[in-house]
Length: 352
Image 1: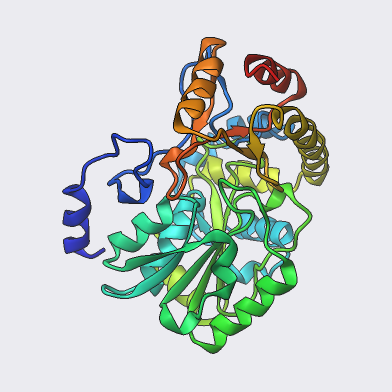
Image 2: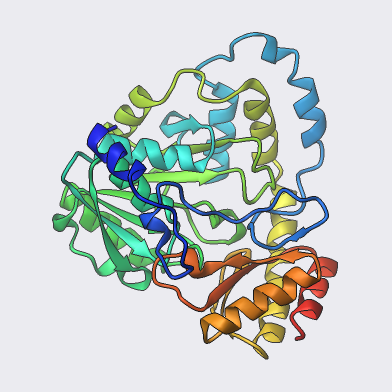
């Protein structure tokens, strides 16, 4: 990590204005609340977890008394089946963000430009700056029109967070070929892809895919994910990843969860049904962005209207995501798609 870049980040001040892009912060603001009495619609994690996950976690205690096998063979195989790629191309990481950091650290040098979508996950720009690189912000819908020759890396979030829209699969693969021809790395963050039927870019030459078990399997505290890459990208990632990058419980629960295809199918069906129902109701108060993800981005029209929506929810013990911390948004909130009875409570709180 470039020391000058770290010092520059440490010298910046956290945002005090909702319109300030989170990319300018030393630490990026995220959703989620710790209060068990608050119904959390600010984080996009599945409110359900796969059956048997808790038992697997408990059983892993005995193996945690020893160092895990650093090649994580069962975890790699499960991840390969889950993402439809070769097990040898899977790089285990403690969460999707760790995969993103590893990808940026092994592909970006000080002074280089990285095309970063906006509005999107604020950690991309932060990771680029930590390597001494320069994030070049591009509107998320226009990322596939970027000239790869202008950048060391291009980042795409599919489906994009916070807008929720997926990219056309054929257009995405065509862009990956352009990046490969330009010798520009393409980082595809697929944290929410498991909620869709869209194909993964995992195993595509020149692409580094970052996957997370946080969102789909409802396990943010487990810290389990993986990267997928081929050729020299894979070699760099595997060489740079930390030894014992996953704990024994994380590897065991992650392996179990990625094999629960029925759980994934039920989750996709529930989220799709509830997302459509919520979007129809919320349209009475907000402009609702189309979404393929387990969340909806709501345009309240003005900052005051966004404040009012947050306050209405808060008065009923519900936390929403103030989306004005995303680069480029100034009147928006984001809501997760949760269980039907919880979604009903949100809709009632917002008066729709």
